[in-house]
Length: 282
Image 1 (cartoon, rainbow, N blue to C red):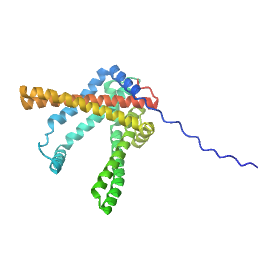
Image 2: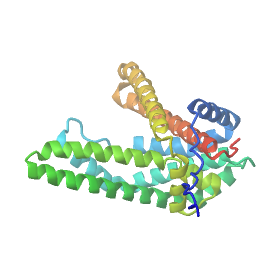
Image 3: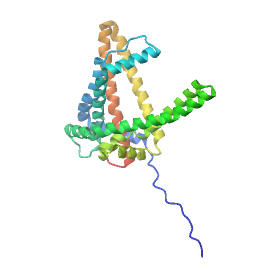
Image 4: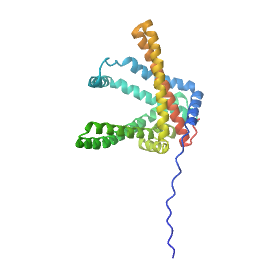
């Protein structure tokens, strides 16, 4: 009697290949179609928090380096953490509201988008805490053995630097794999933070490298624009209105550039989610 032949279990469908150009075009179209509503949300939840941080928080003392600079930043955070936390939460609400506006084909109003954003805010914060905790644990699992081995071999500094690079690379990879958590939550109405992280992980399978390079290019472009947009006006205005007047104008321009960057990034991530999830977002 012939033995039955063994066949491997069928594999799942291959991951969708991300088309960055199509995602960018879709994001631009969504912003253009909803520009009036987005201006309201971006002004309140992206621009205003950055203006508060720019003009309310004191600047660290100039000329500090090394441990002194680190201590100055820690002291600033310890004294102003409620303002920083409120700013972060406001921007998180803005991210969720923008996604609600762009990803819902029913075209909700700003009020409806805000209500949905507030409903999902606790879950979103929980997901971010879970992600940061996981990244922290992974980094410790990498850094501690490497540092221990380096100390035993007499090259603790080299081992520490090498371990830090590996840990940062892993942390960046985990962040990229979870970058679609917010669109998954709001657009797919997923309240469970673990479920949202898992779905985002599945959506980004096979596209981590594309996402990394695209987001890195987007961030680098924003940094260049920010530098040019704040440096040149600052140099022009300094002799005309003095240091304080120039600082006010530069602070406003910097906050405006940051708000535009937040809006574009959120729209792009929503378009990427729509493409990978094969769900209409228009």
